[in-house]
Length: 157
Ligand code: HEM
Ligand code: HEM
Image (cartoon, rainbow, N blue to C red; front, side, top):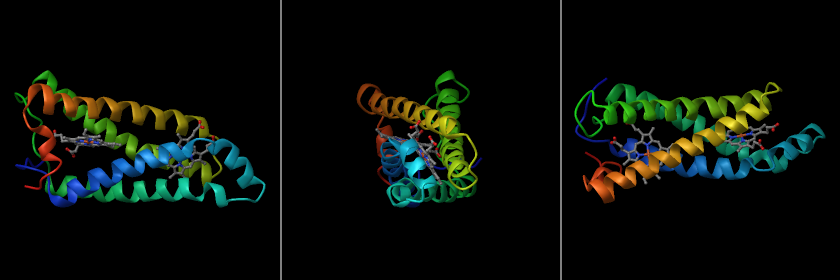
């Protein structure tokens, strides 16, 4: 994987757009089960926003992964090979995995009629939990360690 001095403008834009969309998709997933019953009865309208946000996320995440693999990213702060760097790297990999798996699970329910609605909901909650930890770590770096980490996701380099 290529190591860069910072994230590009495109990477930063994708990070924040996807973050907002995931929050909206998660909030609009509430009541999805009832909405699916309505879908089965022929009324789809109420459920369109959740599916649209979810599919937008899936598309943008694929673009994001392609950009990540081709352009690379800056190394996590800390000594290479240290526990904190490994935790950051594996934490980010887990987020990428969930950002693909959650919408794919939702699509399997919606388009293929697979009975994985509950797994989709649980995986979405897990994603939110991991991302909450991620945001807290980012704030810890910024305001406790004061290493300016947040600036990396604000200003392109
Ligand atoms: C749904 C919400 C979010 C998701 C899915 C998400 C996902 C990610 C991922 C996957 C990375 C790794 C990027 C890479 O190296 O390729 C990352 C980096 C980063 N995120 Fe988030 N993030 C979210 C919310 C936030 C929030 C709320 C903050 C700030 C409070 C934040 C701050 C950062 C920072 C500073 C980095 C750069 C870390 C570094 O350079 O090592 N993120 N984010
Ligand atoms: C990151 C993107 C997504 C997030 C965070 C998310 C989140 C959620 C949440 C929290 C629920 C409620 C689960 C429950 O009540 O137990 C839900 C349900 C559902 N979502 Fe998503 N979702 C996403 C993407 C998608 C996509 C792309 C689709 C379809 C193409 C989709 C289709 C569904 C369906 C069909 C249900 C109802 C499942 C059931 O039968 O209980 N979701 N989603």
